[in-house]
Length: 423
Image (cartoon, rainbow, N blue to C red; front, side, top):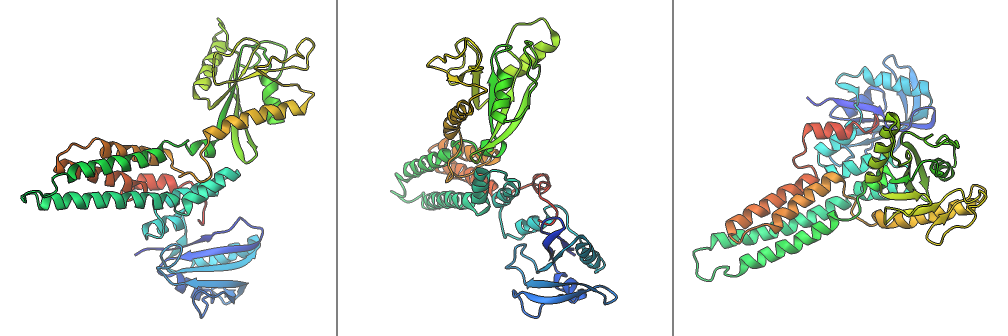
């Protein structure tokens, strides 16, 4: 028998209000055990919550929702209690004594919503991202996913695949008739190619991971060029040690920054040089690796940049003899905040082209891989109607996996392990 689960679903106490959620076949019985079951479904009712011995635990608003039209697809009760630690502990302890009830695991309410068809896998992934969102862009894209933007697109693609599959079935059923679908196979292949282009366009947009993880902005150049000073100016804190000694920075130093609703990961690197010092050589190798993984490169050097798309920075422009900034570089002075702002504006201009727009389909790496597999199946089909049907079946399977039709338990464990207790 399925357990009935309960947990605190709001923030940790103390708080103004604490929401305790109960879901499962014994949800109403659990509420009744605390004398908390409202007489009317879906209407908030003030109830006196009582323990096993009849003692008053709290006075709370109680709401009951009969399944399957609930957040989890099961009978569900919410108790809106006072948010003190002792109150919450007493209510949870009382629920734990009800037969068939247990404390929920992290993400278990949402996992039941997925199992009961209230949401699909892409919506659950979007909800996980929404719970972790720290910037405005992260919130906007995660909310689009949680609200079903990916699901709707996939359903549209699946509908088109289903229509093409139906046309192939008609061709095969009437293959013995003269003139039956003589030119339809090529028309179907043409429609498959058009659908492949549509899916490929969505999968080829800038990756949403750059919004979630932050754009990697790598500061690179020779030793003692002012890279660490630049990192500290951009991060507005002493993230890196600064000294006049060349080679002070020997490893990558990372500083996450949120600016204008975007997440960045600033990375200071060891100076690029030839060296016989074993430790320094490791730092140089890591600097080159960081450059290979960079979204944006800031080249800090008086020498021309070897990276054509890099922002060429004229650092330490406040020092004697460096007050002239070449036209092809961005001058930065420690005594001039406006120069740092100008560099941030240049970074933001590059970032705009690397990040998905707010109305983009927020496809994760898993979604993009499945989309590309579907695209290959749609584009690579031979002319034989039987093989066309098989390629359509493959495309349908890949697209359906986006919304979790064939999700494995391991995948689900990894996803819902990201959720907090009570969600």
